[in-house]
Figure (cartoon, helix red, strand yellow):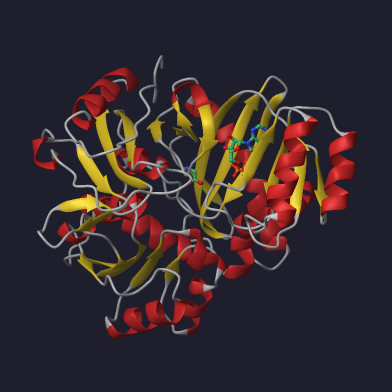
Amino acid sequence: MKILVVGGGGREHAIVRALKRTWRGEEPLEVLCAPGNPGIARDAQCFSDISDGDVRAIVDLARDQQVDLVAVGPEVPLVAGLVDECAEAGIPAFGPSMAAAKLEGSKIFSKDVMEAARVPTAAHAVVRSREDALAQAARISYPAVFKSDGLAAGKGVIICPDEQSAHEAIEQYFTEQRFGATDVIVEEFLDGKELSLLAICDGERALPLMPARDFKRIFDGDQGPNTGGMGSFSPVPEVSEAAIAELSELVHTPIVDEMKRRGTPFHGILYAGIMMTTHGPKVLEYNARFGDPETQALLPRLESSLAELMLASTVRGGLEGVELRASANAAVTITLASAGYPESASKGDVIAGLDDVPEGIEVTHAGTALNEAGQTVTAGGRVLNVTALGPTVADARAAAYAAAAKITFDGRQMRNDIAAGI
Ligand code: AMP
Ligand code: GLY
């Protein structure tokens, strides 16, 4: 069995590790990764000259290497149609088609599907010009939320406490075009605790994974700008087993049904970002892939075979009768980011202490490189993720922070309140 993982971040490192750890097939499992990174290269053969956005090159690689499955990590190749191209080449691929990945690729499309499927979400309006947006800004109450329609690596959302800040946001979207020429959603601000509930889907049904929470703001106490995610934990003790099934019926099943009805069935991971409000759960957004860094906390808890789950999800109805097995242990993931993140990312800072991390702690690489002297250095915004397991979230948290403290580099940013008080 040969699986090609597409991507080169912490999520993909966690996927590579989990594929190998949970494999129980009789034939050996070989895992490849494109492009991968220096951390992933210790666990899988990497093809570092192939970009994860280069659909053609990935399909060619998958064909040359005669892989049995392509497992797509990031959203960009999904939205660009990698799964469709693999299908055309006769190679099974884990993830949604281009048409189904639009649930993540366009927030306007996603709202339309939510409306048709009657999934609770924030009230919203679409604005397509600066003038439209200014008129809307004068009409709404605050705080309000502005979101670019297209992909923005988790950074296209601006929460505006008042009309003045809405005007500043409007300049960023429409005058500076910070997120390209995009339409914008203006929506109601939802208050509450966030929950990431991912489900693996086979076009017909959704099998929910363990609940997780991630921390999007850069600074402690949820201050500062949004990032791709600064840490995560799983499970979320306030969400019971029964509540997971009920939530999944509310936020996954109707979407899977609606996408099937539209002739664009959803396969792969349907990630619902949920706000638990006093008026019940409401969906903030859908992603069409594993979350980063939720995956780094989720997958170390998985006991079912990840490869089997992925293969089953590529087949219509393939998940029928499949049950998910997860460890009762909790997991906490701390993200270490480079100086300047999320506005910029410092590169080339030497990372010390990687060898001092205790046994049993999982360190996944997100943005690292090797310098000429062979030292591991920073090479991106999010650099490393440190995950620990423990009988409770508090135990896992203590172990994760103790391990994270051993890893140092210039300008290292880390939140100190991931999973605090749980
Ligand atoms: P999204 O990319 O839509 O998940 O938004 C990124 C983050 O912005 C979310 O995880 C929330 O923390 C925040 N956010 C998005 N929409 C809202 C909303 N309507 N009310 C409050 N916070 C929001
Ligand atoms: N952790 C948020 C995301 O993956 O979109």
